[in-house]
Image 1 (cartoon, rainbow, N blue to C red):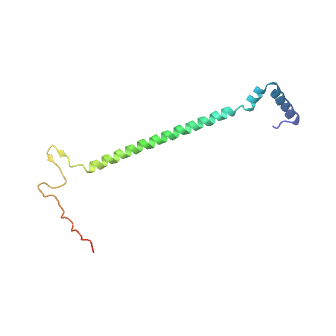
Image 2 (image 1 turned 45 degrees about the horizontal axis):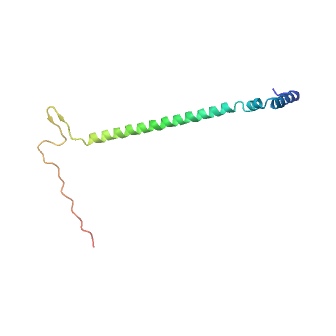
Image 3 (image 1 turned 60 degrees about the vertical axis):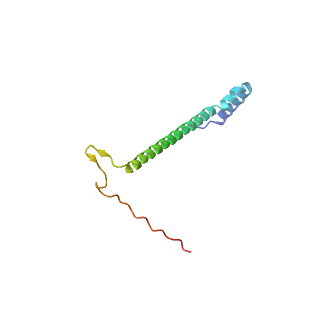
Length: 111
């Protein structure tokens, strides 16, 4: 509901009188809510920084875990066969010669 012209005039006169009589109160009334909005904005900014930091830490920890997991998988592939209680187990049959490849022929550079 809009104020009538008389009500708007009366409020303007009250505002002028307060400004003359008590300037500090007029300033406080003028800036009323600004500090609260500023505090809310600062709190939102701090919350955003906290969330960003937590996400970065989580990504860092997950990266480390993936690297360790990959290293463990990689090392288990290259580990020699383990022995059991009954003897050794390996991929190669027992009493066989190792598979040694002949050296590749060397090519002479063309002149």
